[in-house]
Amino acid sequence: MKRSCTPLWLAVCLLCFTQCLFVVSQAMAAPPEERQAVSSQSVPAQSVKQQAATTGQRKAKATPQQEKQIRALIEQLVFDESIDSKDEKAREKEWDLCIDAFQKLSKYKELAFPALVEHLDDKRPSIPFRNHYLGFAVGDACYWNMVYQLQDRPKGYSRYGYARKGRDGKSHPKPVWKGSPFAEAGGLKKWLIANQNLSYTEQQIKCLNWMLAAEKKIGAADAESYFVNILPLEIQILKRRQQLGHDVQAELKRLQQIKAQKLVNQIPAELLPEKQK
Image 1: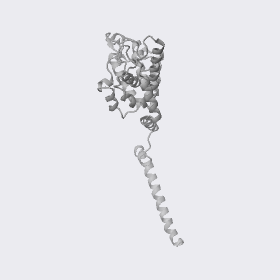
Image 2: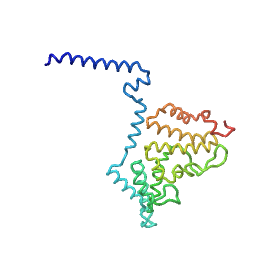
Image 3: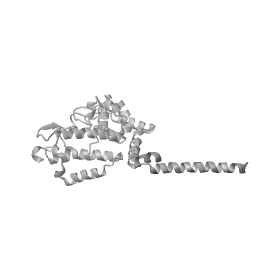
Image 4: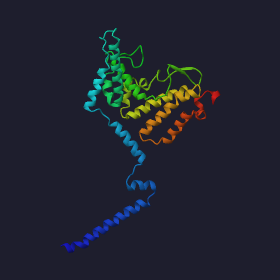
């Protein structure tokens, strides 16, 4: 039986080998774009890197232990108003505890967002994190904790004050004080729902792009205004895009050089007053 099957077995092997050669030859003969499909449907390394970075961020979720710590920090935001107003040391200590909780919550990034959203309407007393006269509730603290993270304002961006001069020479409220992508969406909670499919970094980029567009609309009264109010945002956006695996290294290096050397001749003319173009 074994001897009688040998010719048949050899024939089958030869047929399989011939078919393999045919497939390989077809793949090699095909145009580059078709060859890619025939071979292995390979994806550029850059795309793989981007997908991995984004997918990894989207999977971020607090563990039970982390959630417990996050909720404990939210409780720490509550300012004990029963402390004697004359006991400055005790009140200062309570104030510092609130600040400590706020900073630690920021380090949890989007892991803390679900719990923070739950407390947006929390009216218990806290300390102001935005305005010295308004917004003393825990809900306000939770709101600004998320907003500051999403705005992702870079160091050196903007300066103290409510308004600044634009390219038209007039005073304009700064984007960080008037308007926001959250207000346009009907509130932070609605904005988060509308952008829930974006990763944490993608959400930051979206907010940064909103601020950049608003700053560019105001324009720059002079070169220094561009270096302070516009360029830092452009650089920050590229840094965040780089984290997602985007190929922005060359442009990022160019903008960083413009900032470091204050290259006035590299400022887009449309952002400056007519006389400075």
